[in-house]
Image 1: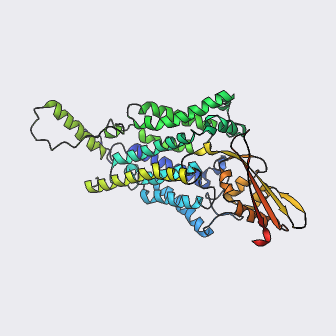
Image 2 (image 1 turned 30 degrees about the horizontal axis):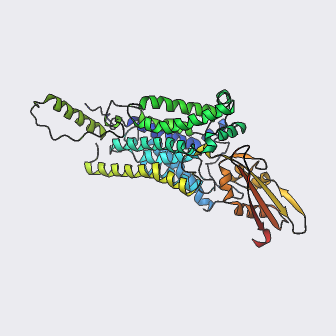
Image 3 (image 1 turned 90 degrees about the vertical axis):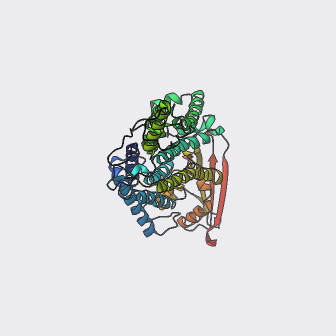
Length: 305
Length: 144
């Protein structure tokens, strides 16, 4: 039987948790909420991130418009977190966030790109069907989850692909980051103690990132890949403190966590989905194995939408 | 209450389009079109970079301007990035600065009263013991 929550489809609950977590991270990263903690990634600013300041800049939009975009981004994140107008809220976060960041030639750092794109995607999926002030009707849980899973896998894939360059593979980048103090702590000292260990770490990181995507997408390896992914991000946060990137990825990884029993979305990406069986006669089928198969597919489809 | 099958199909189509856009389109465009800033390259894209700014008054008197001095007159990320670049700094911003040396030269002119000409040299180094690549941009301040 399909397990359906009273206020949303099965399996959407963790997507909703992911939506709320991403929205909260956007608020934490772009507003002065965390300024009293003096975190290096957030700074001590008492204004919204990107708020116009006096001085030379490469900004091409008027200051009043940038201010309006900063406020829009914050309101969008609130809407996304509360689940009231989450779709326009998520899009507002992404569009206004990117426009604000475009006022700097350096563009948004990876963390903000991840948060903005995730906000837009989550707002347009079934992550808005539950744990929301104004839940939307379930639309397509299967492709909602597919979209978020593919997004996470692609982040790992592209990151790993770039690390195939010689300058990464020979450990140079890691050593430089270590000497510059960007990688610190006891774990970093052990992993980057010598040139040989730096090379080994660099190659391992690239292999882990290249392997995580396919292993997360494939149902049989998913749970092991999930453990590896969470461990990987915990390690990175300890060594490199890469802004809020690890926390954002951990929130998005919830799309891979099983929440509602084995269903169609638990299949690997290359496995064929169940075909909709013809309408079953009201009488009991004489072919019991066939009847069981039909029942199974019917249940999967029910859970998928 | 869920939506009808036609609407479900529309949403599914939208999700697949978004998948292509965010998983392939945006990163691939960034990878091929610029330096991979939107292709999840993150800290792997870090190079060492250093900026030197020289000004002269046209009468044979020349002086150096510290990038940190410029940083004090800049805003936002530019202030953070310029600060301390008298010495080699590590990050992905060096390659971006290279594309904006002309505008930075104009900024240096404005920040150096009496300068008739400024010359900016950005040094980029991929490896700590590797070769340094210098890019220089000069600007006649009066010509602005």
